[in-house]
Every structure is written in C-alpha cells, then in structure tokens.
Image (spheres, one colour):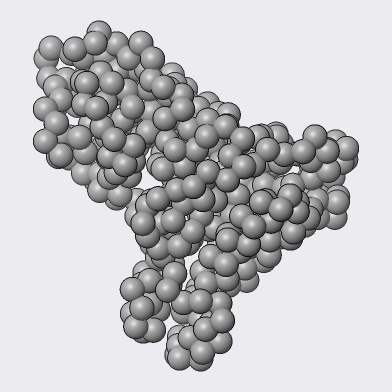
Length: 366
C-alpha cells in the first residue's frame, strides 16, 4: 500500500438547471478553480483520524456510523461508504485542506467527498470507475450525512473538464462536455452573498417531497417526463397550489438547460444570459428558494449591464453568478457593495471564474 497520497477535487458552479437533478432532469455545471485536497495515510491501529487545516480541528474515530455530523462527516462518510461496499480499508489519517468556500452553494461538501474518494481509491489500489467514484461520494452525503441531494454535485466535481460545462442527464447519469470558453469581452462573476445556504434544515427536503408528490399525482415517474408543451394540462390537473409552482419551475428549468446548450453551441451569449435570468425568476417566484441578498445581487447585476444573472446552488442564500461585459466589472462591484451597504447586508465577496478541471482531470498524486 502507498505510504501517502493526495486526492484533489474542485467545487462547482451550476450554470443552469436548479433542483432538476433529483427530478431526473438536466443540469449544466462547471468546475471551479477552488479545490479541496485530502491527504490519506494508512495507520496500523484501525483508528480513523480526520483533521482540517482551515478549522484547526482533529477528530479520532473508533467506529463509523451514519447520522448528522460536523464537517468531518463528509470525509469519514466516504470511508464508511467504501467499507459498506466491501472494500476492506483499515485505519487511516485523512487531512483536509480546502479552498472551496463553505456554505456558498458551490458544493464544498462534494469537493471534499470527491477528493477523499480519489485519495482512498489510489491509496488502496481499488481501481474504481468514474461511475463508482461518484456513487461512493454521493453515498457519503446522502446515506452517511443524511443530506438528500441529487446526483449532480459529485459528478460535476469529478467529471467536468477545462473550458467545458457538463451537460448531465440525471436519469441516465451520463454526461456530455459542452464547450464553455468565455470570449475575452465577457466575464463570469461570482457574488458570495455572505448568506450561507443550509440544505439540511428541511427546506430542500420539503421541495424534493413536493416534487415526488406532484409526479405521483400526475402519474409520471418523475417531473422530467412532462414536456413544456404539456405543462398547461399538467398544471390544471394539480389541486395543490404549491405543487403547481414546483412543477412549473422544474419543467421550464429543464427546457432552459437544453436551450442554454443550444445557445452555447451557436455562440449566442445574449440568449444564454437571458436564460440565466429566467431561471432566477423561476427560482424566486415558483420554487421560492431565493432570499433578499441574492435577489439584490441579481437586480444590481442586471442594472449594471449583465447579460444575465441567477442564484446558483440549493437556495436560501449562497452565491449569485452574473455574465458581465468585462469592462463593467469594476462598476458592478462598486454598485453591489453600495447596494448591500444601503440595505444593511454584510459586504459581498466578488470574484470571477472560468470552467476548470474536475477531479478526474486533476489526477491524484503522491
């Protein structure tokens, strides 16, 4: 067994396709430049030790069991998921060093899980496939931590490639790389709204349950099976107003993802931007997952000349993305900081990003 290895995997930005993944729909994420690194080193005493460079904490575990955990559960849960699948892994030191912002809707948890599974796969010589790596990482989140996320985050963190977005079909779990190299006159801006989102507080699960209930009422396996052309009839058959709103968002959002891919293929960045804004409007009005900080960032971006803007991630805070003319970046940055100050919000953090490499491209190294 190798003495020590490092697994590296990035966070992700979902360009468009929010809350469609657990409805068997389509999503279009890119990998961030910010990455999580997990160093794995075997131990001879059977103990699992997990430490974090950012938090300055270390936890020693004699046994692993599912249940709500602090940050270390995203690391330890991967080891648990591998053991559950019959891989005889013993004690190990797992040291986390992550630059992915926590609670920003950028899949910091998936980055940690994917970096961990890459490190353990290489350490133990398991030879897991790309599919298996993603399944194990998702199991750590769903089954060990109890967070009912869909299949996008771990696959984006592992499978995305440089200068491409990943069109992921969340029913078949197959992906296609879509070129996403921004022209020089455009920038993709990230606005950390300083309002951390929380998926384990029940809001996410409530919406997932509502979608499952609506699909059952409509007699379809998942909301992905409703076409936009059939949406008026489907909505008329729903007695629950909440179900109407949730279904309308998911069905139109799936269509927007595919339209966005077509816009990118034709180089129509204005059409792509309009789809981003339409997605945000739908999340705000029909899925009801935005908050004043993210709405203000979107409004300010559009007023500053953005081609489009939307919240990304599970909602109730997190990060806003905006597609801006490069020469308006400074003016937008000043405008959004001023707008936040006037409303008494914490000062947002503003950065730019491009489509980076997923963990499978960033091969784990010794």
